[in-house]
Length: 79
Image 1 (cartoon, one colour):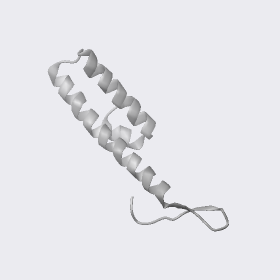
Image 2: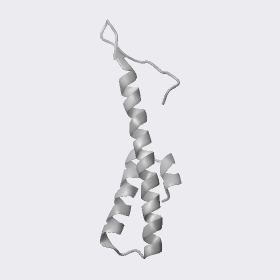
Image 3: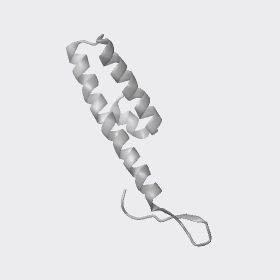
């Protein structure tokens, strides 16, 4: 799976692929060229994961409790 495909997948799927890349690099079973490609994919995946987490964090911060105890999500153009 490439980082571009992981963008369409869930955060969990992206993290799983990132863990696979780390395990492969730690084992040292990839050639130098393959290791560089895996490293690049891992960097891209880590950015994707960070963006997804940031978006989730912003949604949580926008969630506010109303006077009657109900929670309302206030959508904005951010995120």
